[in-house]
Picture 1 (cartoon, rainbow, N blue to C red):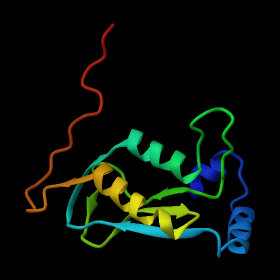
Picture 2 (picture 1 turned 180 degrees about the horizontal axis):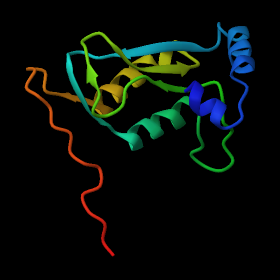
Picture 3 (picture 1 turned 90 degrees about the vertical axis):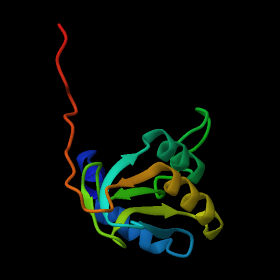
Picture 4 (picture 1 turned 180 degrees about the vertical axis):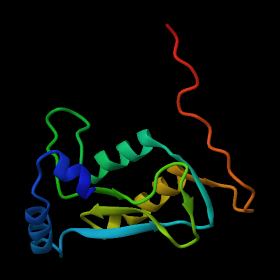
Length: 130
């Protein structure tokens, strides 16, 4: 999250300072791996819809964007993960959003290979067509 923020010329220290001022209004919650294995899927559309629902995006062009909500992603697809390790941190406004956040992340993030069988990464690009 920080790397993305700073790559767009954002002042992360100012962001953190402002976030600290609103600690009562903005919450964080970590989604932890429920088993060890390989992170096999992070459904981008479902995560994007969740972000809009949290206020961090627009459903229609007139909607305002709350730049203080969002995700901090700790692992990417193909990474080995241990049970209990944080996968994503969610920045949100209300404790009432937690159930929706949990359900969406559980549906959007998949793990495979909890048995320890070696995982073979498949290439992202199979061939170039000309």
